[in-house]
Image 1 (cartoon, rainbow, N blue to C red):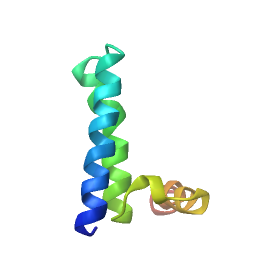
Image 2: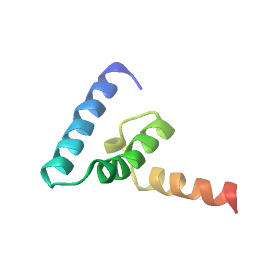
Image 3: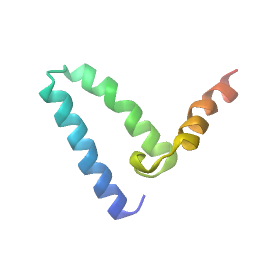
Image 4: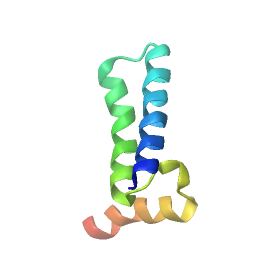
Length: 68
């Protein structure tokens, strides 16, 4: 991910964490809700707000094909 995309992701990710904290979620719940965001970002090496339906379908089909 380039620097601009990384900065945008970091900003969006912090907003995500802040929103969960404002909702009163526990640290473990925040981690549970945030881990898939980090995992998808790492898998595609781009900010998740740029992903489309086909990207997400491919991502979720990937473990099915490799573990079935």
